[in-house]
Length: 130
Length: 130
DNA sequence: CTGGACCCTGAAGTCAACTTCAGGGTGTAG
DNA sequence: CTACACCCTGAAGTTGACTTCAGGGTCCAG
Image (tube, rainbow over the protein chains, first blue to last red):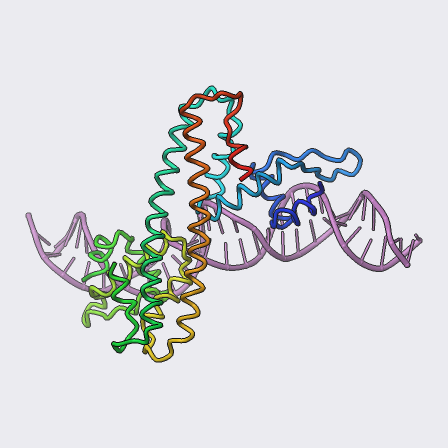
């Protein structure tokens, strides 16, 4: 798969894919011998899908690289891996809880907005104070 | 309340608070006439709490400013407000769904990690392919 | 009345995550 | 054989969200 095809398949731009390769989120792609073009496999596409989801979940590129690197450890050195994973999980749970509260806030706000305002000003401020 | 007190109460740094004021996330603080020090009220603290939660929920500063600005609209011009809010809500739901999937991935990964690997390599790759 | 903790401003610096640029090679349809 | 879409590299530029810096005023405990 050329970089352009991978871009179309993954939804990332060509330049971004090159950047990700440089940053170690993708393994250095193997090259078509004669023209020096990159040649990607299914694996690369799977990684990009993972990257997209991880980004949507709020992980940084550095963290995503760490997660991806875990997948390549021999399975032996699993202790440190486990620690990292549970830290990430706890963090994710915290963020999800925040998002849930945020969602409640916005939904209540929207509802009262639709109900057409008893009071003078939108009640965001009330919602805001937690 | 001085900026330093507000910083301690909110958990944001003094410099960050000045920056947020510049960027319109806080209203221009009123000043102690003689010494030109800012004087903040409870309202400012409430806004900063909201900012913290909104950031944790993945909103950008620009979006947070938009949300805060909604709270100041007269309640009359509510239609456009409603549109913005439901866009944000939908977006939030998408992100929460992503995070949920991510969480499942990581939890499964952690479980198999703890179970001590039947196969050779960590099964992140499997989890990764969705 | 001085030392240290606090406040002010405007400008420059930093970091992550890209994007754009300059300058050049490749491949194929007409 | 040339026009056009694609590929390459290294370096510089951009954006968002801060942080640091330079240079200065304020306040109060000892």
